[in-house]
Image (tube, rainbow, N blue to C red):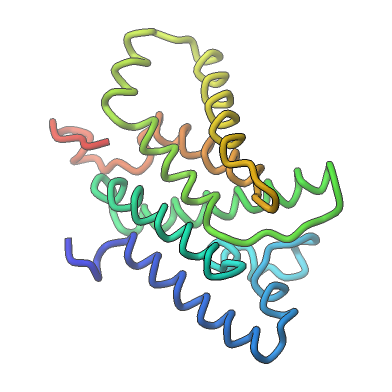
Length: 203
């Protein structure tokens, strides 16, 4: 696939463009560099931050860490889906993870703002984990009930989330993103019809 047609590379390009705009805003009005891009309650006050916060980052290390993770998993997932589906999945999971972080986080502490693509990237990791042939074979052989599968999804998402725990990390967003990705992977939401009928299924 040509690099310009890769949805992963396209997403990374959006990361860089948004960060460049943030950097320019930061030079003029430092406080606005976060306020204009971060998702924060009440959500209706700055609705543009719902999608924009998925692609914005707090600083260069934040951007680099998410970019490296996206490059690793995105190039694998994009092989089994279309560009449009990839972008819709990335954006929708990222927004849902951000909203979960703001709402649930606000129940246990003061309202906080969130920005970054980690929730969406965790969604891709979850999809890759749940949709690959090995996982399908194991789950199919065990013949687990739906309730047990739901418990496994929640348990796995919780374990992975806790391993990423660190000060300032949006753990709820990580959990929500990974859980949504696991469910999407079990349902093969990103797989096209032609890939669902042939024998070559990378994930």
